[in-house]
Image (tube, rainbow, N blue to C red):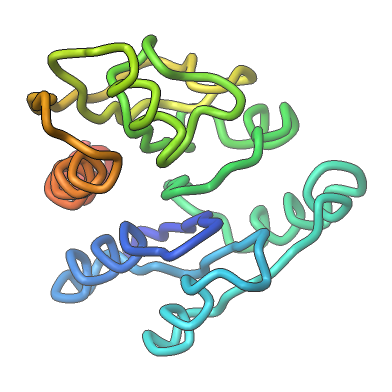
Length: 189
């Protein structure tokens, strides 16, 4: 039986690419679609290059009339992965897919979580607050930004000379290493 993954992304899609590459040699796992809320996002090109259907959607389709939810239900995924997706997931999604939606966050939650805390905003705050360590959190999604049960945290040191770019690079390495493995573990359970 093939296990199906749906990825939500808003930007470059480098984590989506890592997931795709990780599962390519595994015929029993398939990325069935990428959903994107940003018509300018590079993840759209990645999806085309990988021959994965990509659906660009509006806030109305996502939140109000639940068109996106209906499309996801039709796909019947085993797991929904938020890989750099910036919108809050509606309660209707969480009700329909309990314990089937995970998110990747570029900080050690509960620190630096919540609305507006993504990407370089997180790294800037970590540096400005003179943190000595940071990392990533992979967690289940619930009704609140970055508050779901934690599946994995991986840490890295924050150096005094770090910039947003150098710290971001180390965080990306942690994301690339751990996200596909956590997905694989969930699907294997």
